[in-house]
Every structure is written in C-alpha cells, then in structure tokens.
Image 1 (cartoon, rainbow, N blue to C red):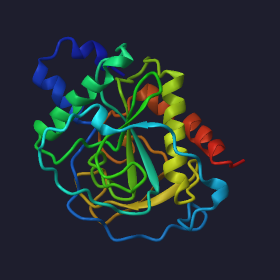
Image 2 (spheres, rainbow, N blue to C red):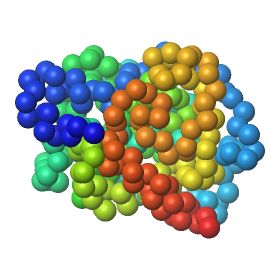
Image 3 (cartoon, helix red, strand yellow):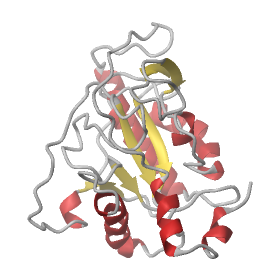
Image 4 (cartoon, helix red, strand yellow):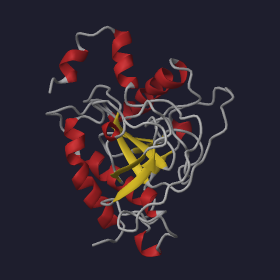
Length: 254
C-alpha cells in the first residue's frame, strides 16, 4: 500500500484537507428502522453490571474549543450504542501532546467550518499519549449521533485516533489502551461484547451498502468496513483484534 505520509508532502493544502475529511462522512438524514440482532451475534439487552466498564477520563470539549457564542444545532441521540467505529484523523504524527487541542480545532474547522457541518464528526478523539478528548457535543455518556460513518452513524460511536496510521506506521500503546478503555465503556452500557458482531442497518446508499440493507459488522469495526476509504489505515486496522480483546477484558469477560 502506498504510504500517504509520503504523498501528503507533495500535495497542495486543499487536497490534504480533503483527505482528512475522508475519515468523517456527514450526518445521515434520519435514524434507520431498528433491526433485530440474532441472539448468537450480540443481543442488545439491559446491561449486566458485570460487563459495565468504568468510564475513562475524558477531556471536555471546552478545553479545546473556546466558547465562540456560535449557536449549534441540537444534538441527536439514537440508543443504544451497539458498535464503535475506529478512525484516524489522517493528520501528521510525531506531534507534542500538549499541542493536541490546536490539532483538534483544526479538524473541527475543516469539518464544521469547511463543510458547514453542525459540529465535528467524531464523538471522541484519542492522542498518541493516550488522552481522550470529547468531540461532538451532546454528552460523553449519551448515545450521540455523530457524523463519522456514512450510513452507520446511528447506534454507533466514532473514535478517531489522532494521526495517520497507514501501513508501517506505529500505533502507540497508550493510544491503543485508551481506545480499548473507551470501547469497553461505551459498548458495556448495552452489554455488547467488543469481540462480537452486530447487525446494523444502512441509512444511506453512499455507504458500502444500499439504504435499508441489514449488515453484519464487527462490534468494533474500522471505518473502511462501512465506507469506501482507507481509514483507519492498515496499521491501526491490524490492531483492532487486540483492541477488541483488551476491551472485553475491561468489561470483565473471559
């Protein structure tokens, strides 16, 4: 696979911004009809306390987005959260973690400003030091509809790793551990095993699947599982099995 880190150095700024936006793909117009999940795959039921992982520490959005007084569209909700899509921001690696708020503001500006969305697309962003940031507004503990996985924004959460994780890139352990903790917490609310599969219904034909199609996906899929993109990058995609297993352990599962 061609390493986009090399290609990025040869691209004009506008094209680089366009590549970044490939990992977030707009809000779907309306929640899809709920579909029944076969019992063997990942039944959505009242969460067992044994499988509820503790919430990780999350930096609130006001720490990276100062109050501008701009009126935002009211957040939408679609319970329960049955899957956690993993992304990368496709922005440079090797950053100083103290500079992450500025990096997130740049992503926000590209999405909410450049594309005139109502907010940043991702529900959470995770830096290479393992710090988790609140992304889209609406409440970290609530099932906020994001703008991260065209066709599958409802009943899912979008987690973006800050950086570009194409083939050969290093995915830092603190980042992997933080993603696993976040997955364990969000999926544990609905008693979803991170190692399982779930059925989701595509709400938009711009995804890989026509609108209304019932699709079986991993409970922790990469963005490319539902949309034609290289996101979250080959290196991060290769870490997803280990992240699923780690998240399951944090839920107290064997």
